[in-house]
Image (cartoon, rainbow, N blue to C red; front, side, top):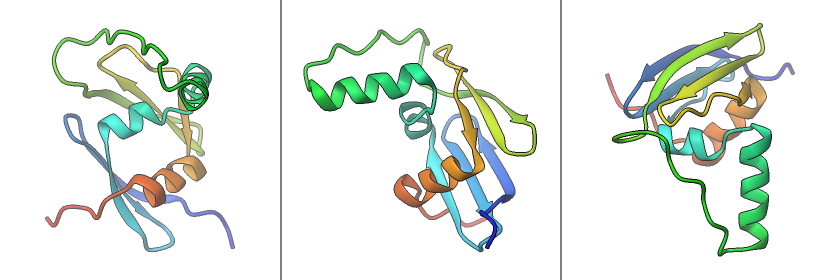
Length: 112
């Protein structure tokens, strides 16, 4: 079977993103989860360091006010780039990675 692909992506800049997938699943992933779980090299290294050392000092946030999503851009036919209000924009979220995030951290989508 092919890997699931998104059929619909619904962005709420303040709250997060709801994904509907080709396998019939759907999930809402909150903005802070998307930011924390960024697949970028610096975010992966920070998560690794935090796993080794619970006293890791986190970098200061650059955003004023609550974290939000400024933009979501397609990357080819296989991923998204999410630009956050704290300046982070280097993670490339593949469909496979996003589907896994939905399974691990997603909540049922809100009813319309």
